[in-house]
Amino acid sequence: MPFVLAKVFKIFILPTITILAVFSSIIPASLIAQEEKAYEILETAEEHYQALNNLCARFHQEIDVTLLKEKKYGEGIVCQRQPSEFSMRFSKPDGDMVIVDGNFLWVFYPSIDRKQVMRFTASNSEGRFNFYKNLLRDPRERFDAEYQGIEEIGSVLSHKISVTPNVRSEFHSAVVWIDTDRFLITGIDVHDANESIRRIRLTDIKVDVDMPEDEFSFILPPGTVVITR
Image 1 (cartoon, rainbow, N blue to C red):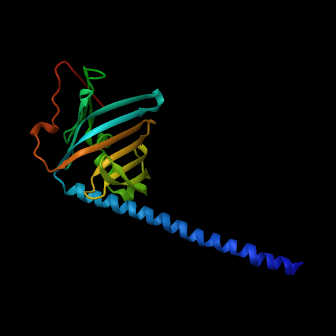
Image 2 (cartoon, rainbow, N blue to C red):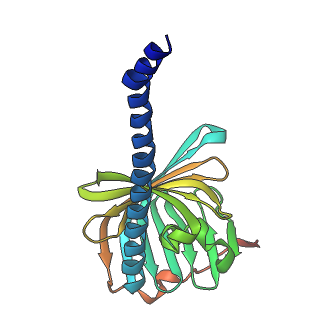
Image 3 (cartoon, helix red, strand yellow):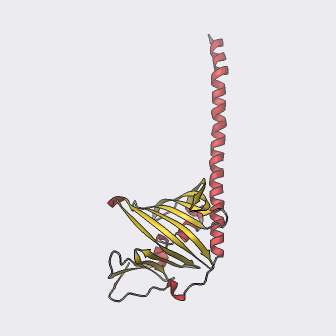
């Protein structure tokens, strides 16, 4: 009987253990490779972004407000200028805007309240809207990242990367798509800390363009009240 058991172990059980051991060594290596590829792409995108003076793109936004079971849609033009200016001007809803002028972040949504303007210190609140800086800055130190392949965003082939913050952040997780040729962000899905999901797709991306000097200036509309946070 011991001979039979030994033979069964040698024929059936030992090969199974060997296969499991092989897979246990392959899978972690594969995951590490995917993580490294994700970081390399994010870092390349960060370098390209830092080298730009400015960029502008058309955006289409969908916000899934999970707690209210509502969806909100918007579109317009988003612009960024180094080192810390940002604008998001909506054509739908017309007049809505988010402006970072380097000192303050201004939020004006006349589609919700025509008399209220929110003002925040830019250094503390910029990341809530400036997804370029929020998703590309110091990726190795700030995120656990995973490469998820290549997808077409609009007509642009883009790397798909999921990121999960490993430091305190205003979002739980995000997926970012990065152009395979230009290494510019073409889309994001952000799962915010308030359970909302924000989806933005970028098209007609232009870099180092001439733009009005007041692009990143917020002019207080008459009759509005500023609430500082």
